[in-house]
Each structure stands twice: as C-alpha cells, then as structure tokens.
Image (cartoon, rainbow, N blue to C red; front, top):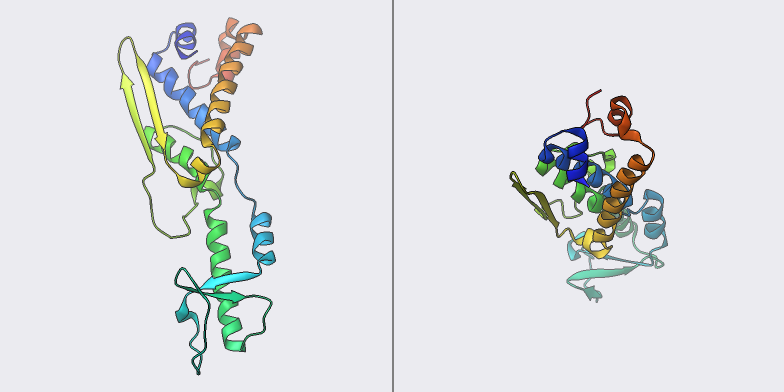
Length: 208
C-alpha cells in the first residue's frame, strides 16, 4: 500500500511509510483496551481484603497476623482500631490513585514507539502521562528502521506486560488492516483524481 501511495503522490517512499505508521499507531491506541476510572473505583470499593506491609501498623501487643507474600492480609469487613483503620484507608487510597494513573500504560506503549520514531501520534493525556504502579520507568519498546532505494521498512516491538496480556498484536493488526482498507476505499472513490481531495485525506503526503 505504501509503495502505491508513494507512486501516486510522487513522494519519497520512506516519508509515506512514516506517515502511515504514525496513523496506524494512533489507531492502535484507540483499539487497545484500557480500564475506565469508574471500573477501577468499582473494583476497589468491592474488595473484601487488602494486603499491606507489616510496617503499616505496630500493635501494642503482639498478635498473630496472616501474611501473604510478606504482607499482612486484612479483612475489610472486620472492625479495627481507629489508627489502624485510618492507615488502611490511606494506603488503599494511594494504591487506588496509582492504579488510576497506570491505566493507560498499554496504550502508551504505541505512543512511546511513535516518539522513538519521531512521529506524530495522537493520544489522550491519561495515556501520555501514565505511570507504572511501581513508579519506575521501563524500556519495553524497540524500533528498527530500514531505509534504502528498493526497501523501506519499520520494525516495531513491545513487551509491555499489560499490552501483551490483552493481545495488543490484534489491536495493531486491526489498525493496519483499517489503514489498508482506507486506501482502497479512497482509490474506489477516485479521491486521488484531484490534489485537493488527496491532500485532505493524506495531509502529510500530498501538498495541496
């Protein structure tokens, strides 16, 4: 598709490829699922238990505490001393906010790939500003650009855990297929017969 579009536009193939990859990544962001704030809050409110570090509360008298993965398991249906309950609520609120800030990480992976390629990729603010619950920065993406007279190719890769878990490859393939179909429909409807119409559909490729 990109080679045909480049020929029609009389534009450098590598330029056309980059423009189309940017459009594909933007659509991949749309196609990739992300939890809504309301869903995250609903799951938070419906929780029956919470795991907190032992340091959250030090009882005056030693008591047996249920540990899971080195953390204390608290049943949220139980009544606890006011100080402990306040600490639990505060810790859970922090965790809730971390999860809300992290909800756009899967989509952000496509955005980060676009940045690595120097492309204009559309993404909402919560995607651009998403932060892992750990607060750390991870390098899950890589790109390889092949440029030549005969061959132009851009290879992208992401191992972002959430994106892999929700089948991000399918979201990307749907974006690619959609962009290819967009080109076919424009050919069928004679969009490329006039420069003005073509420029409206492909502003980064055609100049009206």
